[in-house]
Length: 122
View (cartoon, rainbow, N blue to C red):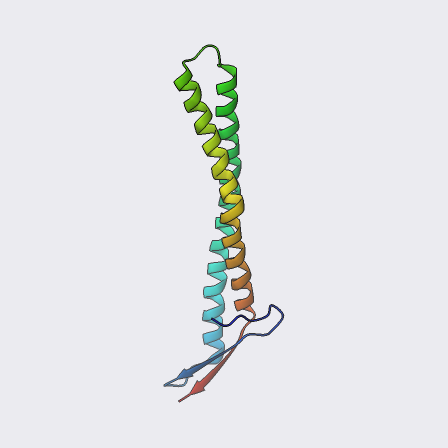
């Protein structure tokens, strides 16, 4: 796939068998892209909620493991610590990997919303 500079205008040329109303086609295309952009933005908001939830769960389990260090069996303490560490790791994974993919998708969709469409009949 050819890389296009961010500042360059994207033009899509579509060859059609029959005449197509350009305005209606552009409206449908833009509506589809807007819907996809909304989905990505909702996913980003949901990921924000998930990051906070994982952080909270991680902190709670690690604090529980520290508070009950002398009262509980070693295996249970280790299990609490592992669960807490895993939750914090998942939050970090969402920050490092999840957001990058969603931000890339969001940027691409915004660029596609700015494209010009040309229809040509065969």
